Image 1 (cartoon, helix red, strand yellow):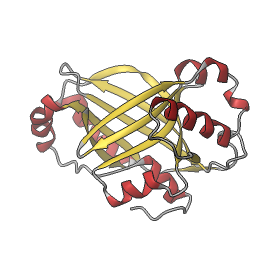
Image 2 (tube, helix red, strand yellow):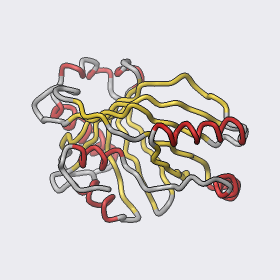
Image 3 (cartoon, one colour):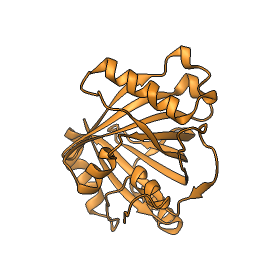
Image 4 (cartoon, one colour):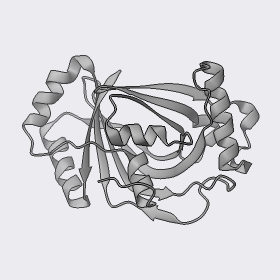
Length: 221
């Protein structure tokens, strides 16, 4: 379980944040930048999206995620859980028998995901449907306390037609950069002191909801 504090920045605001990070903190580059790819899934009632919009304190998101273009070696189905202000993830490795996943339709991928999580826990006895595809570049920074900052840039959304293959069709660019500070519970006071000295204002944000709003599926500010 960990905390996640998010910021929504324009390009100019991001430049100011990075100057602060390099001059006033001891965060250093942790990994090379990576291309992050995600497909989000939801049930027929859009429960995951609606729970997030309503600010339900205990909720889940469902996605397939992989990095760069190596979908078979770096891909995981994920259930991301939020309980009050804390987040956790459950990972399910994409099985080798699905190594030709680029040849599958979005609905076939959703079926594999639903079957996988049902085998993990029979409470997941609902059908999943593909809802949104997201791609962006992520930079990683970390300090000596293992607090991580990620910076997501050049975010793009695609619709997710059930019978098409992934990343089919028109892509919709998103204006914002998303910065997240991620840390364990025992670092809460340290991070609180760190950001209290800045003028940056944390905000709730979900790429899933932002993407659905970009596609005019929901209203989200």
